[in-house]
Image 1 (spheres, rainbow, N blue to C red):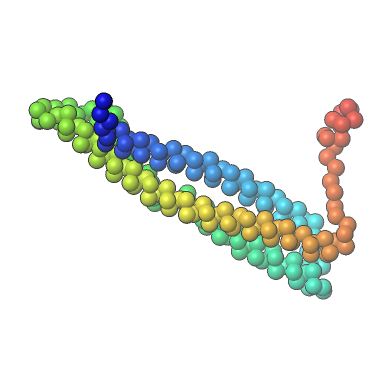
Image 2 (cartoon, helix red, strand yellow):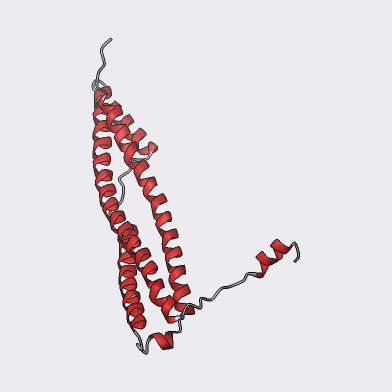
Length: 193
């Protein structure tokens, strides 16, 4: 029994692999957006609860450190947002195979034109289509992957800055952190509404 290399199935699998990777990028982007929301939530806690008037008077070292970290955070946030725009609004689109009705019409025309070489021509057409599409989609995925590595690095830096931002925030607040009680949770715990 002889194993032969099947070009058509090879390129078809590569084409499908690149489309699966495209779907994975969509999932990753949702995860990154979730991390951004968490990130901005922590920042908003700091900004809402910090006595900003005292902070911007720059009366102590903690105020300088807080503002410095805040500025760094905002710069990184801008880089993350720019990369998200680059990811979503770049002109790099995926190449798809033609719609079935278009393929069917092409194959019917080909059959009328050259019925003798029909099978080999169809195979060559499909191999070329899958090869070009897989190559193009692989380039788009590599481009998107590089953007995601940048975004991931920036998000790590943002979380690190938020962690470091807590130290001057704690000093500015003199160790008195604001806590919030949610009445719904208290009602559920006590069994009363």
